[in-house]
Image 1: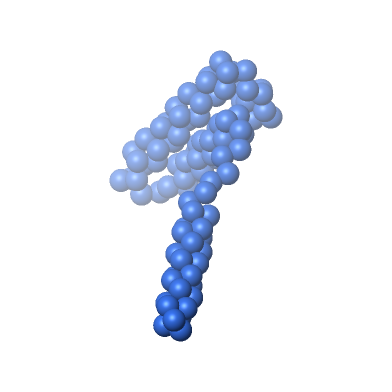
Image 2 (image 1 turned 45 degrees about the vertical axis):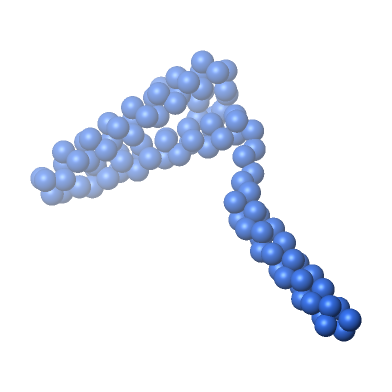
Length: 102
């Protein structure tokens, strides 16, 4: 009888350990997505920042081998930003960065 009580307590401990483990695991993968508009604006702001960073890189690069890369990087970042800006306008999303950026 005593042996079964000990076993039941051990099973309860193991069950609680598994539940705690899976609860923590779930919390690690839970993401707060916010609104789609907020996510889009974050993406747009990141693209704008990437473009400005690429421009700074281009202005500061001195190695002739890196100039082509700097130009490619700057144009790719600009193209991405312009694309996202057009999408924002089509979706009617308004923000400081989307009103008069181009």
